[in-house]
Image (cartoon, rainbow, N blue to C red):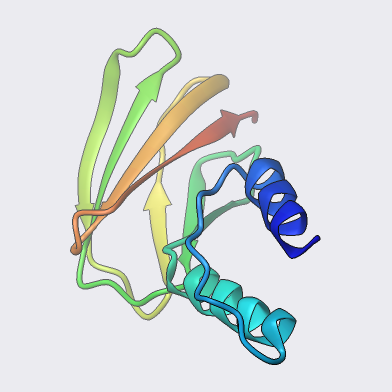
Length: 121
């Protein structure tokens, strides 16, 4: 039963987690392990989205710098910028036309995240 629950979790969240061998209270061990793995992942939030002339990039981990690239949906690179965050939040001024874009953010650990960005003024 535990195996099926783990397989379902991995399928729903599109993750492939390795679980330690359970002994005794295996459910608690597995839950602690999943929480630890998820807390180590780098996550970003963009707000407001849809944006006007500026966005804020909020990270769950402090970074020394962020490299931001914005592309249109055809893949054409429109903006590249290196930012130095102040704490967990970084602000970015934009001069983009209304529409949908992809924003790719790379941190100092060479981790990359891609998010959809909507511009509407």
